[in-house]
Image 1 (tube, rainbow, N blue to C red):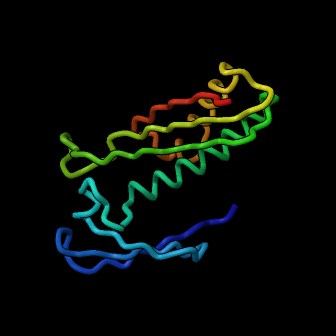
Image 2: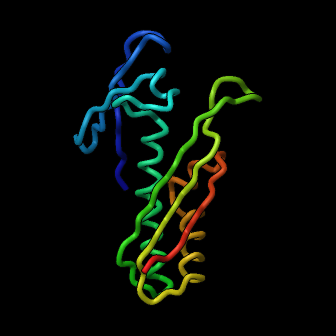
Length: 147
């Protein structure tokens, strides 16, 4: 399996510095990062490690869930996955940590009822490689069929 890469160039200190993260494997873009904007409610046009983790988690989860739906005898028509990644204070070790991830999925699926969909959704939460990498973070799931 391939290895994917990203690169960050950072200038300055934590509070007054800024950087750019480049998605080097795909070449699809370079994005500004800043700690003050990372810790603010309004990202102000910059990304953050938490947003990048959310993107990785939502896309990985969608792929895993589509495979598990098919294994359960269903046909995924559409999956809408949102990952909300929270950053907060690490009261035990100091500094900051990821305090939780909420995965929300709404699906249009043929051949599975709500219980079958939720079972596949829970299995995808446990089996997605990004979920496995983030086992130190509390991950919650809200899954439902639509239509």
